[in-house]
Length: 370
Image (tube, rainbow, N blue to C red; front, side):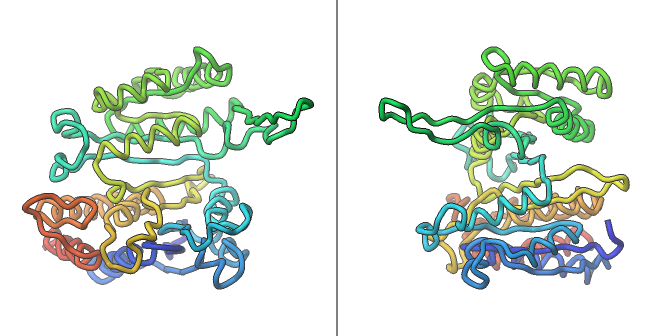
């Protein structure tokens, strides 16, 4: 990590620019109030890049992403680009960032803030105090395995093929991230697969167990089938702390866990690469919500997921753990004060705009350091 704390912001499409403006507000606050400056560069991705440069991600922006300490992304995509060929769609820009940066570990926290317990579709007694993280393998598995494709059969029918494949190294490196994360939390990891019907799942279970026994015996490890995990996330989600799973199951389970909190607009994420000799990781941080083109430009989007993603950035890429906790405490304080954007609006609360929510977080930060 450089002494300059370099960062690339790619706001993207839809509500991306709106929510990232509030992240820039907090970045400015850190500089002015705490003397923590960042060298912030900005680039284009997704539809914005297509419109300006004819490609969902330019080589110039990709080069910047590889140079900086961290990348913050808003959102990509929208209906105006739906008619483009698959390889030219806005989402290809995000996929290229993940691929070229070699981001293999996706971290999806799913905390339930006390002030938003009633926003969850589950009963308050089930979700109150919930704080889990799903660690999803991001670059292997059925989404990338070969062979794959659609072929025409002799009788005129067709067959679609996707291959679920994992290696020892792929499994152990994602499991290591999960164990290291659990060591900073409550020390519990649940590894999720389908070893009862899939050989790749059996290998997954064996390799996670072997790594645990060799290097992380102090961490409590359990194993669970993916279908049971999906049920348990609804039945008793607080039994989990860190869930480690593959690309396919992680895709589904993380969305399920997200809805336990009541709104995608509250959830951050981080995608991490391997640590180098100095402990530096390439990393991409983004809110879980999409580009939400139906509300873009109206100033009603929830910026809290982006601000919480920035807090993850401070913690993982810059080792600014106290400052990350400060932002998280400010978000908690603002919610506790009754402010809500449209997606998390509740009876008796004050509905505010994107900008007012961001300004309120900054005011709360001022209170916390006063």
